[in-house]
Amino acid sequence: MNISLFIIFIFLIFALYLGIAARKGKEMNLQQFAVGGRGFGTLFVFLLIAGEVYTTFTFLGGSGWAYSKGAAAYYVPTYIFLAYVISYWLAPKIWRYGKENGIISQPDYFASKYDSRTMGIIVAIVGSLALIPYICIQMKGLGIIVSEASYGAISPVFASVIGAIVITTYVIFSGIHGSAWTAVIKDIMILGVVIFLGIYIPIHYFGGIQQMFESVQSVKPQMLTLADQGLSVPWFLSTILLNSIGFYLLPTSFTVVFSANGEKALRKNAITLPLYTILLLFVFFIGFSAIVQIPGLQGADGDLSLLRLAIQTFDPWVIGIVGAAGLLTALVPASVMLMSASVGLTKSFYNVIVPKATEKQQLIASKLFIIFISLTALIFTLSGGEALAMLNIMSYSLIVQLAPALFFSFSKNNFINKYGVMTGIVTGVLIVLYATIFNIKIATFFPTVSHTINDISTGAIVLLINIVITIIVSIGTKNIPIEKKQLTQIKTS
Image 1 (tube, rainbow, N blue to C red):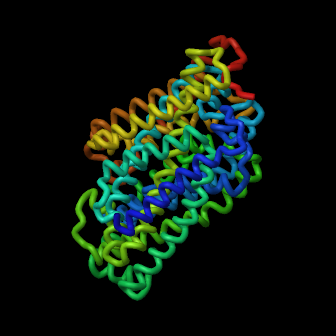
Image 2 (image 1 turned 45 degrees about the vertical axis):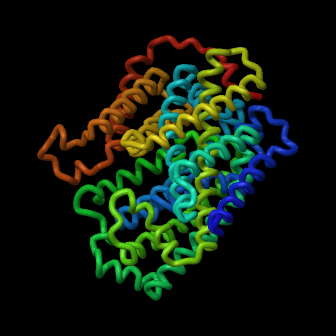
């Protein structure tokens, strides 16, 4: 066992221990398991939300996009900044309603707001459809990072399998408590590694960050500006808007919001998290440096730019620390994703099938869903293929179709009803699926349309269609009598 692999292994064991030990002193009922008994303060909420930003994307996608796409990569921190601004107003409203009504999952929220179990089931399906590819990406990214950082001593497949077992184990034992405590060590690691690499590499190879950009300018000047077509300004702006709205619509975001101990913790995080997100720029610096130092990476190999450049630059023991940080960026977000999806399915599907299920039975069902989802994601991860890439592309376009239902739900006199929102969501999801599978753009129907219009994100266009349909159907069905029922099984004491 080389020193790099040994360091990675030590951190893996430590993460597993920390994740399991996190349940100590906790009576693990469903609310403790899913949202930590709504007891997390500013720090843990900060770490869990940050976990959705610093995933394996930090090590692979972020530097890879800077390497392969150039300036287009800046859409990532931009949409995250905007998402946090929106959350200052959005998250406290979601938390307050969840607290008042005993809600612990995203499907619960929508089912309660629109008095419809069917609505909850639809939201659970859409949420799972959006999360599974993200879980796959964490597992696949973990495999790549560990394999590269161990100098090939561990295969990507073996690393992905071991990672999936570790994640599943500590989530089953400790729920969100395990995710929160492993997030502590993960964020300390990522903070140190990203800042160090982002500053050291440009100085080591170029003499500074400015000189690094000057070198890129001389080699590939097109990487420092947005493209005229494709990843152009219209694409950049529409994608930022779409993803910023969709960020807090992911089931994981709802889970973290419900775990907070109050609205103040959420507002503090909305203020401080944009500062933390600036660290993504250091990841981009590494990708830009790699354009000059390790040219020739083609296609998906561009995602290896950070690791390849690090291996070229440092001794094996440093690579072991980098690999350990990369390992943790997969474990934490994947664990929250697993738990969010499983609790959502439990509260929507299982509670419909077994309406009189006890708290213990619901907890068992959630753990079984965790195993099922983890196994499904692992199968997709190992099989790879176009299906996974396609799901990843449309994830945000899918989840953002819940936006009209969410934003209208905040109105005291909401004229939008369950028929409208369900029709809008289903229509939006079907259009996104169709457009993604068959690569449909506006130019498909209007060949003469300008690229300025054609480059607009498909998900943003579908969202507008969704809003129009939601309003029209709600107005058209406003006279249909709706029998009000207390959805007691939705609520958890």
